[in-house]
Figure 1: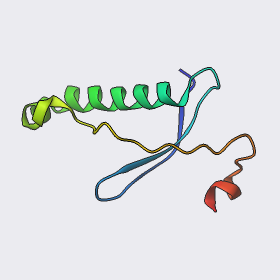
Figure 2: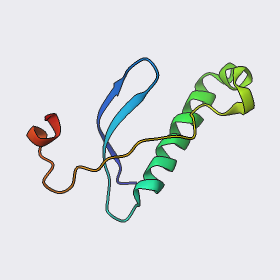
Figure 3: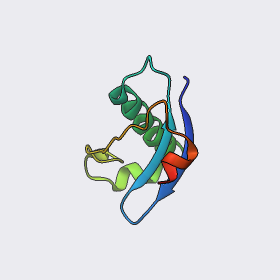
Figure 4: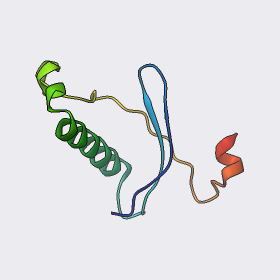
Length: 79
């Protein structure tokens, strides 16, 4: 699909992704695809999780997105 996970990080309540995507997908489309894929994989590997969730939703509705752009070298991203 042309989406590459460059880095993945976690803290107590959040998962952080640095994703490289093709320009033919909007940021919203990429977020929807990533959240859908993660949810499907978790439910497939651990079906008991879905039974424990209120309304069956694994990920919340909110998200934060920021773009790096074409000049986003590793040094720029690290800053």
